[in-house]
Image 1 (cartoon, rainbow, N blue to C red):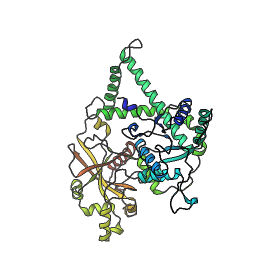
Image 2 (image 1 turned 90 degrees about the vertical axis):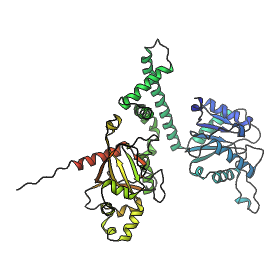
Image 3 (image 1 turned 120 degrees about the vertical axis):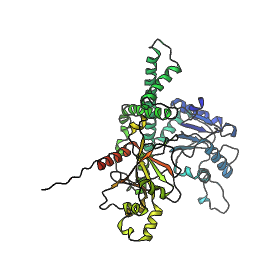
Image 4 (image 1 turned 60 degrees about the horizontal axis):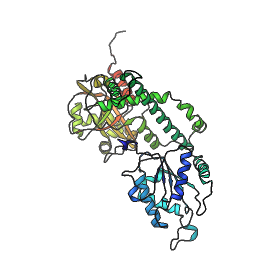
Length: 461
C-alpha cells in the first residue's frame, strides 16, 4: 500500500553530495518535499514517476562529458520522468551547462553547449518530451561554494520560477485539488466518527469502510454488485470532490492570474485546437468494466450491413439520410463518402433505469461519425431528422481507428434511426468506441424526445 504514496512532484537528480545537500536544504527551508536521486542505476524507480512537476537536474551524472554524459543523463531522465507527464519544469543546474562541446568540423561559434547537447539527445531518445518540458537554468559554482549558498539557492529558485505564470496557475490549481481532497477525506472521517459511535471511540479502518459502503450503495441506489461498486464510488467521490473545489476559495486563490487570463489569446483558434479541446469537454473513454449498453457510449459497427439490418434500412437510405444531394448524384463521390464515415449508434437510455437495473431494453440512435474534412458533404439542408449536438462542435478522438481521420470528428444522428436492443452481451460487430459525457448525452436525449413527441393533426378552416 505504501507504493501509492511513492510519486513525488519534485525531484533533485545530482550525483554530487557536496551540491545536492545544499539544494535539498534550500527546498526543505521552503517547505517543499522532494525526492533525491543520484542517477545510479540501482537507485532508479521501477517505473517513471507520473506526477513530477519540477526537476532540478545536474547534466553530468557519470565521470564523463560531452556525448557520453548527455546520453547517460538522458537515459536516467527517461527512467525517472514519465513521457506522459506534462508540463514538467526542468531546471538545469550544472557547472558546465554553457560549456561548448567540441565537434570535428564544426566552427566554434556553431558548437552545441552541454545543455543543448543534452536536450537534443533527450528528444532523440523520447520525442514526446519535446513538447512537454519547460527548461530553465540556474548557476552552479564550479569551485568555491559560498557560505550562505543555501540562502542564495532559495532566492535563485524563486527567481528561476517567478516568470512562469501559466505554470504557477497550474501548480495553484494542483494545490487546490489536494486541499479539496484533504477536506473530502476529513469529511469522510467525520462520518466515520459517527459510525464509530462518537468522539470517544477510537477510529478504525472498518469505520471508514462502512462510510464508503454507504456512499457506494447510495450512488448505486441499492443495486450494488462487485462489478458496478468501484464505478459507483468513483462517481460519488468525484461529485463530493467537485463540491469541495467549488466552495474551497479557488477563485480567490487564482485571482492573481486574473489580469492575463482575461486577455485574448495571441493567435486565432485553429479548428484542430478546438477539436482537441472539445475532446476533453465532450467525450471520454468507455469504462474498463463496461456493462452492455451504457448511456452515452458511442458504438461503431464493424459491419455496415449489420447497421442497416439493425435499423431496418438499406445502404441507399443511409446515404440519403446523411450524404448531401450533390454527392448522391455522383456514385464515385458516394463511394468516397462511405469510405470516409463510420456508422455508429448512441445509447440514450435513462441513467436511473440503468442504475436501478430496471432497463429491459437499450435505446439506440443511429448515425454516422464524420471526419472534419467531410462535414461539408453532410446533408443538413431541409433535413429535419438530423440530430446533432447544439452548435455542431467537432472533437478529436483519443482512441484512433485505422482508416479513419480522428483529428476532427463530427457526430450526426437521425431521429428516424431508433431501435430498442435486448440487454445481452454485445455482438461481435458492435464495438464501444468512446463515450459522450453526461451533459452532451442528456442534450441529445432531450432533443430526440422532443422530436418523438411532436404532434400532427388535421383541421378544416
